[in-house]
Image (tube, rainbow, N blue to C red):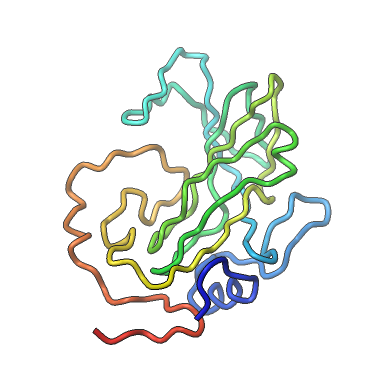
Length: 213
């Protein structure tokens, strides 16, 4: 069993055996597009064709506890223009099923960063499952274009020395099994019971046998 940052071979095996990534592109696609698929030590996920574009047209306030629908407009298309000094929410094409002892760290792509377009995604926690909601910011004073169906960010998979006592799924994380673009949420206090019921270890990575308790 090898801990730490996992290579392309491990990513392919986990995608095929445990359905860690669906749909899965087992090679790095680069010709004429922002690259996506398996790289040496990560997976470049794709941006889907639906977006929430944030705008100040209606003078709304962005409140993470209660987001006003007047703060954004919905857009579907092969590309999306981000207003100057604004941002959009998108989602990944791929659905991720994170193993119990693996956390994904997401970083933006250099090509977008060099154009003043930055991507922010919080960690894909151990035991989390769903499509990834992606925040894309335009730091420039000009409109900026992003492309659906092409690479938007890379996921790095870090395997821990042993599974945690409580995974994201065990504690009933508020973004567990999210689909589509998921807006900010705040826990309502009804999910705590899930954390007290920990299932046996699952999604055992290559080379690891399940321990008896």
